[in-house]
Length: 96
Image 1 (cartoon, rainbow, N blue to C red):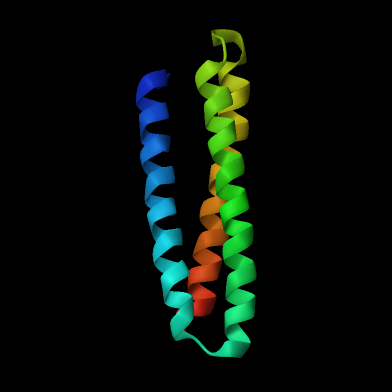
Image 2: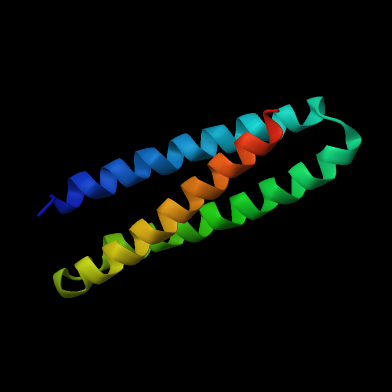
């Protein structure tokens, strides 16, 4: 079983990295066409909301007891994977 503190630290780092990427793409949206900009802004808004939801799950995970840890960890991991996938999709779309 992975150490709880190690896992939490890794996930905090991952969220910080995704946050930095979101900030970067938020500034890059000014370099795309007006037509694509509206779509990019919407994608960024959705990604930010998903990131905030994952951060809330991490807080819940940190405060959970040992009995709830594995269940909450699984839910957190799914949310984090979904956020990462959505972010990669957005990058692929707007990097063209």
